[in-house]
Length: 229
View (tube, rainbow, N blue to C red):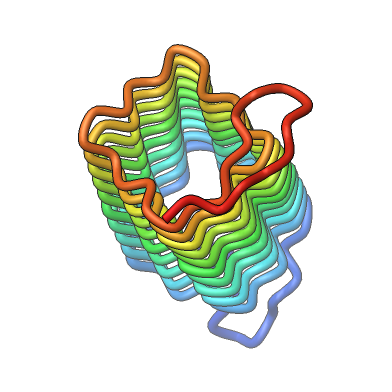
């Protein structure tokens, strides 16, 4: 199956493309909304500006693919391989990405509002200016990630690993960071107002000009959390 065939079959009403083998395919701007692409091989494919609203890409291989400006609202990408993928400007609001491997992916200015990223691997990703507000990042690996200016307001980051991450100027208003790892992270100018920092590890973190007003904090092992005003 090649790009032209999948588009022809989609236009004819077909939606089941499970296990499709389309490495390097040019599907830029294609309409594949609600398509079933589970376990498909789309490594290196060009899906820039594609319409993938509600598509199922569970366990798909999208390594090195171009998904810049793609519309992935509500798409299912659980345990998908998204390492080194280009998602700049993509809309992933409400997408399911639990367990996905997004190591070294580029998500600058991406929309991830309400996305589900439970235990996803986002290590060394570029999330500069991305919107992750009210997203679910429980147990996610964000170590070494670039989160400069990112919006994580209301995000659930319980037990997330943000060690060595750059959160300079990030917004974490009312975020839940209980038991999270922020050791060695750059938290300068970050807004943690009303956030939950109970049992959070901030060893060697940079906190210059960080706003910790109203946070619940317990940064010393075995101490009880206390409200800070």
